[in-house]
Image 1: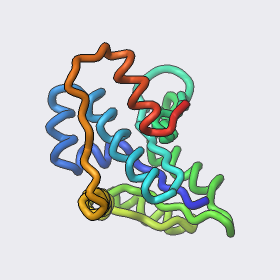
Image 2: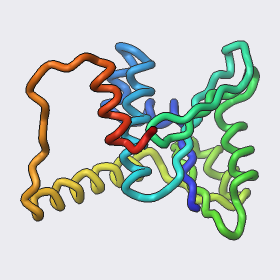
Image 3: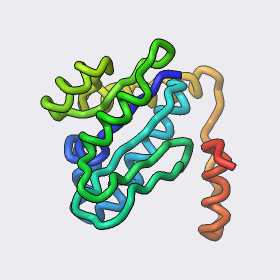
Length: 169
């Protein structure tokens, strides 16, 4: 299975929508990026891993999965770049093509040397927008309409619906 490894904070710093969210609350920016990547992964069929740098945070590496996106917070004294390089080494083989989404030129050169391909933040953004347009076109072609719920629901119910929509159990 092909894999997309995303340098989370690099992408947040490169996309205008996420930059604005970051100014208000970095957690909201991370959550929005994860949502966008979940849609991307579901549509493209790629395994998506997003790495957030926890270089200055004490503790061990933290991994979990949300909306079918694997989320990694690096361990203490490890940069996102180091974690990404390790992941590329582990994941790259004859069966898997690994793509790394980052606009960090030094990181791009390093991952090329390990056999991965790069997607700049801009390229990934363009792909996400193209996917959104394709989905909207398909909906329009089939005559389907997006349904919205007009009654107020409790947050736990909305969360459950969102998990079902994303295919999480």
